[in-house]
Image 1 (cartoon, rainbow, N blue to C red):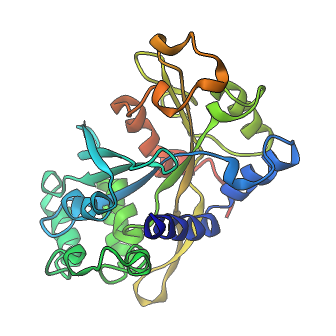
Image 2 (image 1 turned 45 degrees about the vertical axis):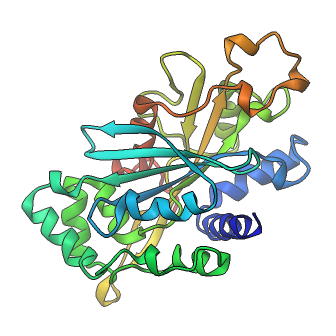
Image 3 (image 1 turned 90 degrees about the vertical axis):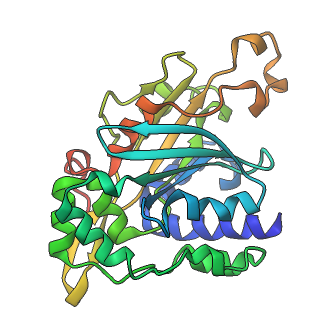
Length: 300
């Protein structure tokens, strides 16, 4: 599992450099004595966005993590956002779950499809098939290399008007969309999402309020919040620079399932808590990168 650890480490290292909220949250948790070291935080899941075209999308991307023992689980459909998704359970509890979504490119307008395929058609065959999946360094490099040319600002704006998800992917490609703090493993005063959200807002983290700051599953056992995506200065074709949505941080509380609530707290493990995801929750979390949310984040 060393290669998988290397890949996940590479993803997190670059992600933290680009999302200052990660360091802000970790530093504040350390300052308040909640954790001693960053690796005490359990990463509930990480998420990726993809384009649903024949040579890319989930069918391509999943090969990487299936190779490392991840198992494909539930399917999710997001009608309004024209997205499909699956989640993947890890080979060992110490690794995060993975949530992979893809844009149903065929459901967009002809103009948007034409723009997207003008870029994705540069990828002639499934690029994962050419990877040595046993080589962690090669996989790490692949996940951070451009798959197509840098988009123009005009193309980005056109996509943004129809699908903010499409615009995000056309620029960011496989860049890690978010990682997730498991708040239920933190000490008293921080271990529920209402408590943790209060802590986040106290340290200046802006929260996605689409559908409320806390998104709750119908069974009440999965609670999720997310920061508003950080704005990043992006360089488009021709050297034109603009501020656009980058990545964000998610926060999740998975409650102990009813049949295990009799267990002492020190015996509770991941398998005793609510697993999987929830369509309505995820639908709102996607909006962390949307202009309706990032407009509230004046930090440049």
